[in-house]
Length: 74
Image 1 (cartoon, helix red, strand yellow):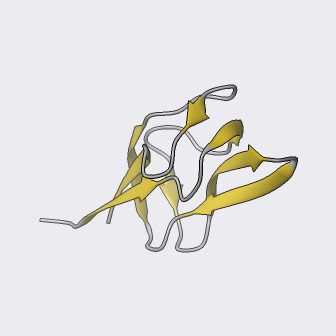
Image 2 (cartoon, rainbow, N blue to C red):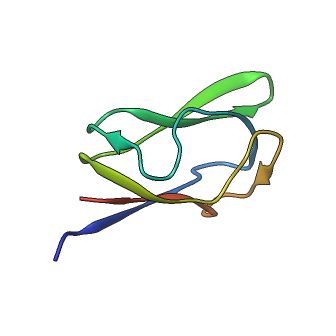
Image 3 (tube, rainbow, N blue to C red):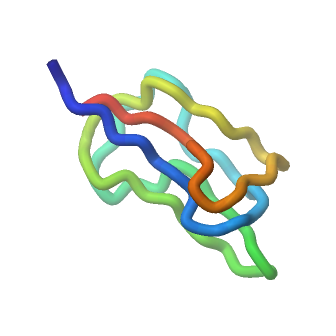
């Protein structure tokens, strides 16, 4: 069975952009989402290649540190 990578927010921020959809294939280092905190854009990257099996956020959402953003199945 493939490993799942849970992508979580490192900081409290707003979701500025979502660059992927559920079912998209991604490579390690790809930006899944762009967060914005204090006018700074923060790309949220995946560590491993796989398929986005779950996407929890949408543009305009607010996330807190540790909140789940997406799950990537390796």
